[in-house]
Length: 294
Image 1 (cartoon, one colour):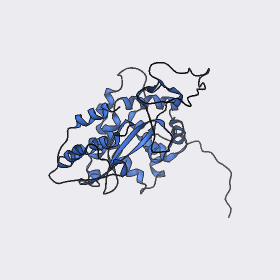
Image 2 (cartoon, rainbow, N blue to C red):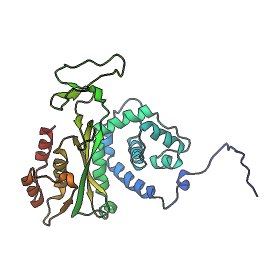
Image 3 (tube, rainbow, N blue to C red):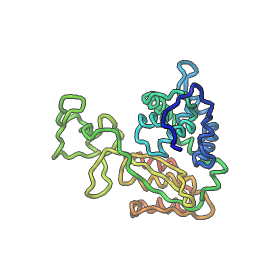
Image 4 (cartoon, rainbow, N blue to C red):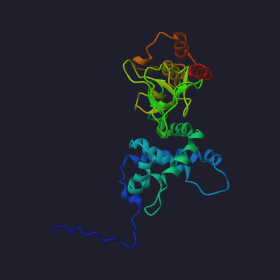
């Protein structure tokens, strides 16, 4: 018999979100691991908030929401908030009930920046990797490293000469500016909105963009990320960041392997690679080298 398409609203709902998510859903295991890591960071969260004032968004819910944004490749905070508002699975993972109000996108972004300034992301990754159920999945002998360009939010129009010369932009909030024929270099130019962004191109024939570089270290057993760092974009950043990331795993009696693509194949700094392969290399030296090449 054909069912009725008429919508019948109910005054009360007694369905728990826990029952709407199937028992074998992969987010259940991830949520358990994330909750254990967030619980260990409670003291660090407390340092980021004032004891008085208006109640902010709980940092644990912010971190779980950011995990969803990464898992489902949601490109903006506004779309993420909208998805949390309409998706029961997202509400369950974040920790919101069916009737709980969702935050405004601007409030979400402002509170997220507080976590970024407190360097909570690296502490969260370390807390996840320290759990026993995660350690069993990790290889301690074989690793791979790779880097990628992270496009900056700065406009190419903001890349102007450091001495203040050059043609002024046109009128308006996003005024036109003609820089064709102008030789723009990182040592003579800088972005007025994001001075740390560097003009860089991925390869010959590719367009140059204002960007940073992101680097990740993966273990080869299950392909899980065990280290990550960002740096200014340069031709030396990838191999220097690789040394930074492999350094915590280099203090071993047995040799370890580190795989990389052809972007790391260079004859520059062979001594540093030998030192890293044979033993422990000072992390502070790596950071200094990256800073010198900014």
